[in-house]
Length: 325
Image 1: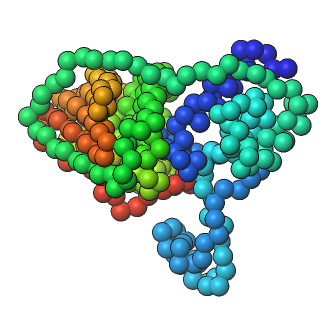
Image 2 (image 1 turned 90 degrees about the vertical axis):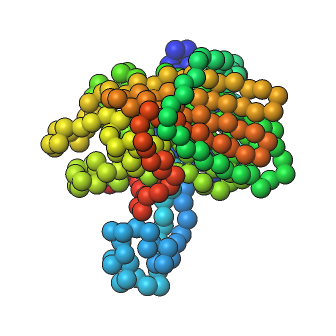
Image 3 (image 1 turned 180 degrees about the horizontal axis):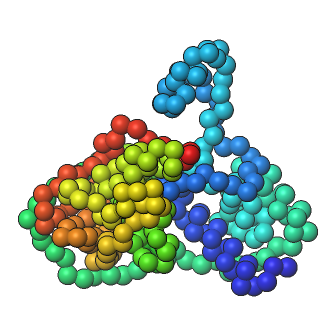
C-alpha cells in the first residue's frame, strides 16, 4: 500500500488534471509544452493523409514523397491515459470513464500494485467567493461569444479555482473556459517555462474550439520563434505595446523571464442569472482588468486598460501542439 501522504499527492495531481480537462480529454496549454511521457501505452490521435499535414510547416516538402500513405498524428494534449492509470490506483468515480475508454493503463497499474486499491474520499470542486472593488480605465474593448444551443450555458455550471497555480476553469455541458493568471514566485525559480500569458483564455463551445493557446514550438533550435511563441502578443489576452515579463536578449534568456507581472482576482460571483469573474493584471506601467461574464446564451469578455491596447483572439498565423528542439 502506498503511504498516505504520497497517495494523497498522487490523487490530488490526478484530480487536478481531471478538473482542467476539456470535454474531448485535452488539457489547456499553459507555458511550455515539453510533450514528454515516461510511458504512453495507448496512442491518442488519428491517421491523416498528406493533405492534412499541410498544417505542419516543417513536413510540407517531406510529405510530397509519400503521396499515398497515411501518417499517425499524435495528440499530445490528451491526458485520458494518465487518468486511466490513476484509476488503477484509486478506482475512483472521477476516473472511471477514462479507464473504460482506455483499459490498458488501468490494468497495467493494477498489476504493478498487486491490485491494492488506495481509497480516497471524494472532494468537492475548489470554489471561492471574492468581491473586491473593480477599477475603471480609459481604454476599453469588448468581445462577445454567442451560444447557438437552446440550453443555458449555466446549466450544470461548475467553477474551479486553483489560485496557488493561477488558473480558473469555468464549464458546463455546453462550454469550457480556462483563464490563466498564475504569476507566483513558486512557479519556477526563473519562470523558465512560463509564457507571458496572464489573462489568456482558452474556450470551447459545444465541443468546438473557439480560442486555443498558440503553444511552444521550439526551445533552442530557433531563438526568434521561441521568444515569439511565448510573447504577450502571441496569446489570447491584450497587448499594450510591452511584454508582461521581459527576457534577456541572449541564449541565457531562452529559459528565464524577468519577473514583474502581478495578478489579483477581484471578483468571482454567481447570481441567479449570470456568473462574473474579474482579474487585474499589472506589469510595468500597464494595468489591465479583464472581466468574464457568463449568461444563459452568451460569454462576454470586457477588457479595460490604462493604456491603448490590442485584443488578440486567435489572431495568430501558426500554432504548435507539441514542442520540438
